[in-house]
Image (cartoon, rainbow, N blue to C red; front, side, top):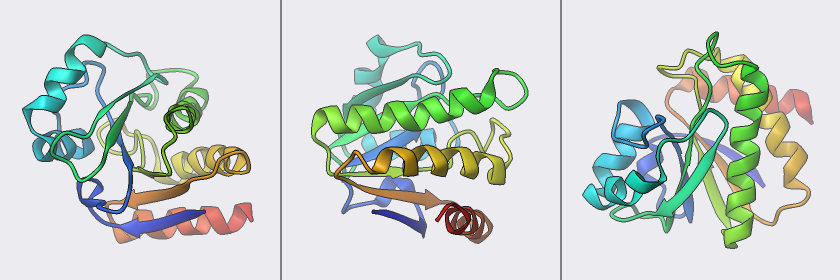
Length: 166
């Protein structure tokens, strides 16, 4: 099951694992990383320290600390126009995150639109990559997958892309 909501990734109380659009050092930043780290508290950054750095397309998993979620899956998406091949690296983020969740027996995962903020990935292109990857994998997974999007515009783009895949 794949669903879409406009909202705050750090406030998904009914989801077991949230995905962090992380930076390479897995530290507090802006956007998704900042929101998750602020709400999780200092324990999240402490747990992340020995796991860093990660490379584009890589994911690691930690506990949720002060978040309402059991886990945080940290993914480093590609910087658009810098990290190449960006489409493959972005797809790898979604694939690896879902594989980690499956390995841990996680029943629900919430994704942000990885790489579309400060990393500059165009939302429609990113949504096409993300959703085609998730749809391809969803047949083999028994979990709820939610995309938590920051704006009405991003929500509409993701829904349109999903409709085109069905």
